[in-house]
Image (cartoon, rainbow, N blue to C red; front, side):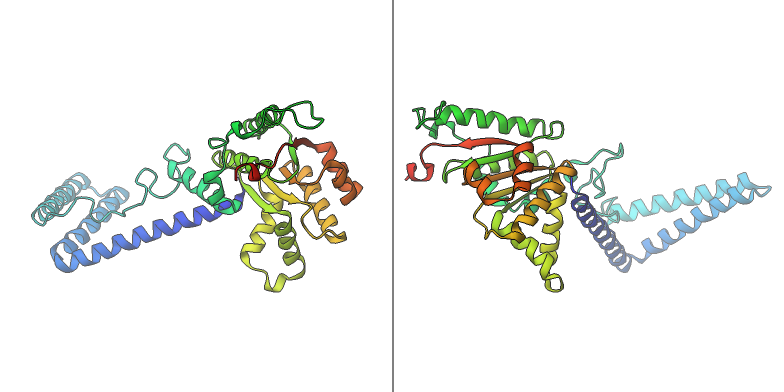
Length: 328
């Protein structure tokens, strides 16, 4: 998981704890105004506790006598405070900070140092937001994937029917998710429009984000727009653009959709190579989706790019009838 994401979440936890402490201070201030005796009791309790600590440090000759006297006074004060609380229907924990998560006291971690369920939820929510796929993933995921929409009739010169082919793609995609942190695998989805490539990207993204894997989804056009703004417009660059640029290289999984629809030139070729090559070096996974055939990809991009792609990506061909037209 991206360190920046966790840092942002922990900053939010710090703000929550500060707010809880401020709210508790405000409740104490208001309570003391309405019940001044409580303020005096609490002040005397603190003073007695300090004096008790001093006795243990100084070790006077009559320490036992003095300690017993202080302990008796402490108990009297506590009893009187409980009575006041009861008479005024005040909860015993009224002055304690009220945390959003009582299990971890808004620290994100349990006493055994394990992540609290609230932190896991926060991480996943941040990953959804940063993936740029929040709304789409609710509709397009493995649970909503319908293999029945693919034809079981032979298609052109392909050995497998579109449905049989999609079973293979589905199996590979699920294996990609299951073994994400083990196997060194990148995926290349290629084929015509409306065949399920983007849907499958979304299925993978949803499954991995739910496992706290950082995923960034960008179309090729928006990807190079982010890079261009970072390279040539630094003074006016937004924080969101800067974060997205860093995520291109740092996220666990980068999904580049619709490769081939961008304006292709020497700049985009150089940056695409840089992105793919850097992610291969750092062993971060990438999925590329394109409407171009393998031959068209070879003709469109440099030999350096295609060498990296053909040697490090598993090519998965999508074919059949355009499902978007079939569903109309």
